[in-house]
Length: 195
Image (cartoon, rainbow, N blue to C red; front, side, top):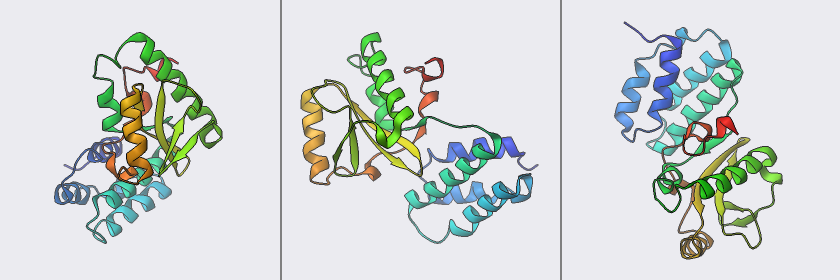
């Protein structure tokens, strides 16, 4: 029994959380490109299959998978706010982040970044944008790739933020340090779907 289109897309999305190249490749090889009804989607998936052996770089393979998912979502008319990293999500498991005031403030910042993208007031620090600018306790490190916003890490403690700034300015923290990207609107503590 093979995959159906929707099951294959969900599985491909789940693969973004895997870190075993051979397992990812084995699962991808089990998906027949002909299950995709849209020719652009089918071509993009064939591109993934052809290129997944070109490099041993897990990040490159995940970029291919994200490109495929973007193509599929555009075909289906589904548009996402952006992605958030595992590190971003883990911060909200802490009691100092997971309270109504903090959640509301970060929800406001994220909504503005999504709305205005690179036009939202920001500072550039290493590979990241930091918003908002000025004297603000709440900040988010983020970047844009192919018109999609990637939220790396939230801050509201000066010591954590200062440490991040120091390391990011020396390029000791890079975009590649952040992993396991999920759609930010599906991150329930922020409840962006209701915003």
